Length: 114
Length: 114
Image 1 (cartoon, rainbow over the protein chains, first blue to last red):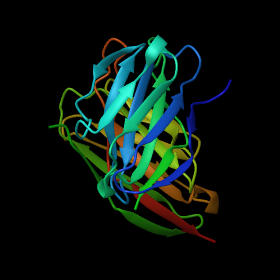
Image 2: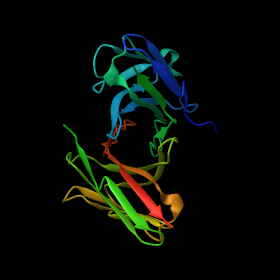
Image 3: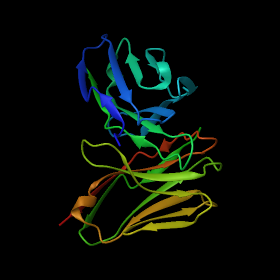
């Protein structure tokens, strides 16, 4: 079974530019989460999709961040325009609706804004 | 808001010794407590979890204990090996109807020296 995959694995952009991160969850997982870890700090919740609907976006830092999950499959997280403090690792995770709800993480997208 | 405190931030042990990482949570409604291990450059991987109706769970060299009254839970690794070296994250959540929003601690960097 393929795990959660994320693209790109690393991205270096200049302040003011736009970056779009992509996540492909485990096939059949309705729940999709975005998390972020800034250097040395905790992994922080950004938002949660159930299929194509945003269930909880209370962790989104500001309106420069836009997440979508059209069709309820893969998801994108766009940062526009990027600021220095957006640097960090962006993790995507997914889980099924039933069963133990175990959350599986992707390897993360490392974003550096210079 | 919901908060998870994790201690220590770094832990260094000799191979064969035990390691203990402790976490406290603020939301008394939390009912699910997973532990993730993240090796350098890799995805966080679930190593063990415990639900609020259980006080202790063991899986080979790894055990987790939960004290609901005190709102704290701990990870115990016995007979540590160099491959146990990683960053360990605790988390707490209220699992409800397939919804599972993890609140993470800041992580513990464990180093096991041969």
